[in-house]
Length: 173
Image (cartoon, rainbow, N blue to C red):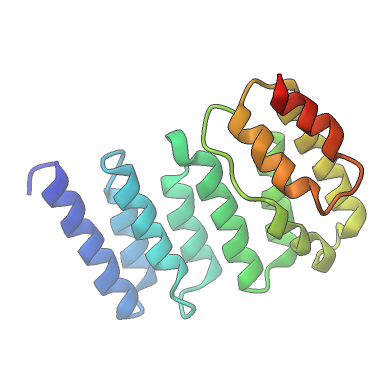
């Protein structure tokens, strides 16, 4: 098939069939083969892999990594961390979250990281590790110009205590 919507839909159908059959590697290969076309369909394809609990963490993370570009870069990277957490890979999940925050793309859509703080409680990093990541996230977002990221940070700040006022001030600018 030539590149375009029909090919992207066919690839999504193939990913769905492969995941239903438990063929995670083939599904992930199909997600990667989709390339840069149809980013929303690529996200659906990666989510299809992520929803199959019989697929291993490495397969699902590979699918999310393949779509972690452009506007959905942060969202896909957070989804990869979530997939690791859901599959009991707490240290790897916490490492991924820390990596995401250290390299946060303020031009891409913000990811919901507030629920991922629990990965730190289960990992070797512990609550202190989350506090370090939270501080880095807060500093990066408040120093940037993305209103969307400030609002995502504001939503997450309710669990942190004491950080709401500076974030609201930044949102009002």
